[in-house]
Image (cartoon, rainbow over all chains, first blue to last red; front, side, top):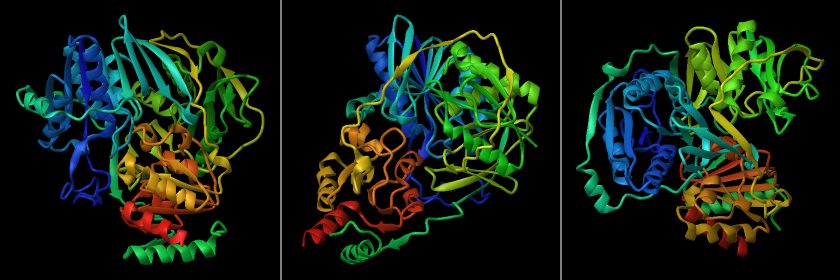
Length: 258
Length: 303
């Protein structure tokens, strides 16, 4: 069995974001990058499936972006993926979700994957499109937002998370693609021996020109903070003073303090 | 300008939230038609055209057939925009329709602006203005971003039928986990988010809840991480609450959490990140380390 996991490297979401010089995405300066949270669930689930099948499946992890994305690939390799693929693209942030999906599809076409795991969405762009578009391009069956995954006798059974906490149980045949949601699993921390082992694993580099044959279908005009910030009171400074100020406000505005 | 609105039916019922799609179309000043996999005896309150496919025949989750049904309606209507709600149904189906139409898709539209649509990015801390190239374009709308509007009337029905091979098989629904704690009755809720750092810090938040005579709430990551039981979860996949006072401790404010608590009477957020989206709904934002501020507040209340 051949499995592909698609991951993106994103900034820490607690960062302060500033527009880049073109004003269409954030400036990379001073940002710390990590693997997109939803993609960690995807990597973990793929590794668990490999373990369930006695180590037989071959796990490839792919990421598109500048050279820093190799760090995210190395983490996935340390978690248990077998080989990495970096699509080298310093301008990945200018590609729309359709182009990103088409590039992964162009890579995956000749590889005959049986299963593809992606995150539900990226934390920075949040389009939730790449996984589904990739499945459409490859003709794979596809289910999004999974919080449960089982594989038995060549069939995949997943639980989809729906609004209100109910779940939809769906069966699908391979080749299949699933997009992973928070709650699917708790991703492992790579152990030191596995980090060392990962250093010996292959990371293939592919150039963006070899895979990109599609024009963008959407164009970003600007990247900016929301126009309306909250209208609330902001308390900053010394903790004791903040506590006193808050209590004054709560006594004035609410009836819950006795 | 013309919009084709894609309605959603869940457990046999036409969802009230579908009316937000009409609110959006009204904001654009666009003509409307709706396509719905639903039931003839539960139709929208709308006098325009509704392309209806029987949910009994096609099922509620059958993306291959639903895609073809939407495409059949697109072919007849030739809309400028095909519009979905950004829900588990919409974000699953919209990219399939967009791929088939070779159309651009904009996800989770929050507002219409000059030259395009605004979409949230970076966990809602930032916005992008994005334009689709060409027509039609596919849009999904953030829940609550556009006020619901009931056009009223009785639809002009046009039945749709398609043949579609099925690559997925829907087995059934699994009910939500029992609630346990009924947060809906609480006057005060103090909720713990990922910003509290670790499970060992949960009692510190619970102590503040107790000091205020309230209940402990939690955001989703805290529940999924096993720090707090699911019965305490506030948000789209947990409980929707509206206490007199809601205190969010170390909660960044994902849209799913905000949807569950933004109707609270008074909202206090404690967060070290001044730009966290929780600030958009907070009456008071305390910019502080939650593990320093909360014990100080609890101690002062005890005096």
